Image (tube, rainbow, N blue to C red; front, side, top):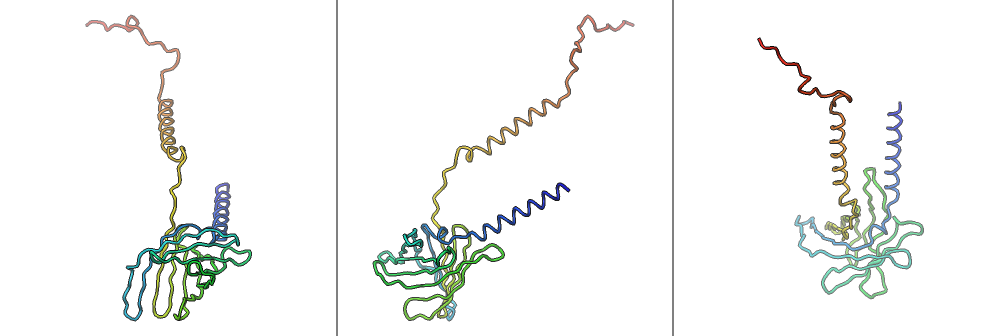
Amino acid sequence: IFSSMLFIVFVCLISFVVANESGSFDFGEFFKGGWNVTSSVLDHETAQVDSTGEPVEYFINNNEAGGLIGHYTPSEFTKVDVKVEFEEGSQTEGSFLISDEGESDWHKLFSFNFEPLSNGIVQSREKWNPIGDAKEGRYHFIITSPVSFMIVIEEDGITTTLSALKYVEPVQQTFFQKYGMMMAMMSFMAITQYMKYKMQPQAPQGAATPSPQQVPKKKKK
């Protein structure tokens, strides 16, 4: 009965943690920082894939309005401003806007509304509003890990896939994080040796070892 109760408590705790993790996604915290983004383009008419483009860097920070502001560099001499605006009271629903550097006119590239799937992956599917004369398309934004995402864009017979990886600074480990496992193993070995010693059979206390004079001599035949 006790083991069954422990199992039920364990399952409840796991369910609680999973529910909290899936319901606490914050796109602002996730997207903030630096990103390295690579792309590949599939032309459905020719069935050719072009993945020769140079990686693009995104740098995103908080702004005073409660959203995000930053830029990306599609080429060495070009910089595009980026802004993320959230719906009031939400960190999973809003709009992604871009503008030429220094310009005041912002173009809404897409709206987003991130929702978790049953397998825990967070995603958003909405309309894609390209700049220029290109037809309106669709996009699929998938959070693949805490430090990566992928966007698949379908427009005008072309599929563009963007794969992003976040710049993560190495975390300085504490003394116990570095050597804790080694110390635990050494302690375990010491305790094991001590227990082996204690479990060895020992002579009863007070039993005297016979002296040579007390050992009976064998009679000669």
